[in-house]
Amino acid sequence: MRFSSRIPLELEPNPWSVRLAERRAAGADLVDLSEANPTRTGLTPRAWIPLDTWERGVLERYEPDPRGSYAARLAIGDYYASRGRTIDCESIVLTASTSEAYAHLFRLLADPGETVLVPRPSYPLFVPLARAEGVAVATYDVGGYRADDVDLDAIERAIGPRTRAIVVVQPNHPTGSCLDSEQVRTLDALAARRGLAIIADEVFGDYPWPPEFRPGGRAGGRVARARSASDEPPMTSGLPSFAGDREALTFVLSGLSKVCGLPQMKAAWIVVAGSAAARAPAMERLTWLADLFLSVSAPAQAALPKWLHERHDFQQRTRERIALNLGQLAAAQTRGAAHTLQHAHGGWVGVLRFPQRRTDEQWALDLLEAGVILHPGHFYDYEVDSIMVTSLIIEPREFARGLERIEAVIARG
Image 1 (cartoon, rainbow, N blue to C red):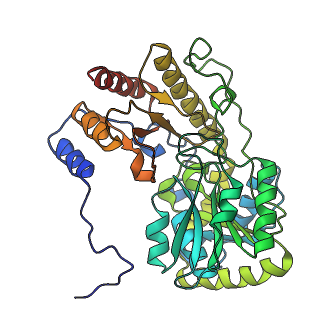
Image 2 (cartoon, rainbow, N blue to C red; image 1 turned 90 degrees about the vertical axis):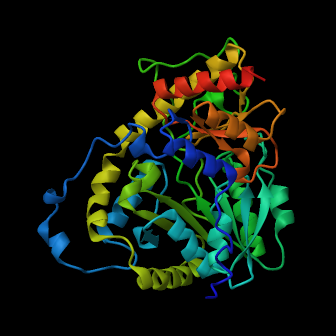
C-alpha cells in the first residue's frame, strides 16, 4: 500500500523515547520535569460545570455556526477587552485546538509548495503540520540561548518569493522570547509592505515571568530567593499582543488549554485582524473551511463563557507556581549548581544550559537513568548543544526532588 509523502515514511521512536518507555515499563521512580499538562500537575481549575447542569436544549439541539456560537465569541471578545484590546466578535472563529487553527490557516494562505516562516527554536509541530498541508517551512532565528535576541532583520532576510505568512509565537515556546510593542508594530508594517499574513500564537500570553527573571533581571546569586505562597504575587498583566488594529492581515491564536488550564475541553480560537479590505475575504474563506469540519462541540461552546470568566484563579495559581519554581532554580544557582537558567519574558517552561561535556541527548539519557525526565533541546530545533527544557508548572516539592537528582548527575561528571 502506498501512503502520502506528506506523512513521514519512518515513524520509529528516538533512543530517548525508547529508553523512557523501558524505564516506565520497569516501574522506575521517575520525576517528570517535562510534564506541561496542568491537569496532571495539580493545577486543574476549581470551577467546573458538571454535564447535568447544562441546559438540556444545548445537548439536544444541533444548530452549528461555523465560526462558533455567538455567546462563546462574545466571551472571547470580553477576554481580550480585559487585556486592553477591542475585538469584534464577528472576527473570531472557534477551532478544536491551535493545531487545527494552524492547519486551517496553512490551507487558507498557502498553495502546495509555498512557504511559511516559523521561529527556531520553537514548537516541534510546525514542520509536520505544514507538511501535512503540502506547505514548505523556512525558519528565522529567535536567539538560541537568549530571550531578547529576536532579529527582525533576520525575518526580513528570510522572506522569499514564495513566502505567504510569518508565524510568531508570543512568547515563544520554549525560549520565552517576546516581541515588544514597538517590534510588533515594526513587524506588522513589514508584513503589510510585503503582502504577507502574520499568524501570532499567543497561548502563553497570560504568563509573564517576574521581572527579576526577564532579560536584564538580576535573578541568581545573592539577589534571588525561592518564593513562597505568602510572597507578593507575581505581575499578572499580559504580554504584548498582535490582537487589535493591524495593517497586515493577522490571525491571533489562543485557547482554553493555556488560558483556562482546560486542554481536555478542546476549544481554541482564531482572531482575525487587519484592514477591512483584507479581513473580510479572509473571514469568508476561513468560515468556509471551518464549516467543512464543525469540530468544536456544542457543550464546550456553551460552557466556554463560564470557563473564561473563572480563569483568574487558575492563572494566578499557575503564575505563583512558575515563580516558585523559578525561585528554586535561582536558589540552585546560588548553591553553585552547574546548570544555568535562560532569562525569558514568559511562558511555563524554562531553558537550562548544562555543562557542554555531553550532548543534550546524552544528558537526557543519563538523567533518565537517575530518574528524571527532561526534554533535550534538539526536540525544539536548538542548534546550541547541552540545552535542556523543563516544565515550570510541576508541583514545587516534586520540582525540588527533580533538581536534586539533576545536580547529583551533573556533579558525578
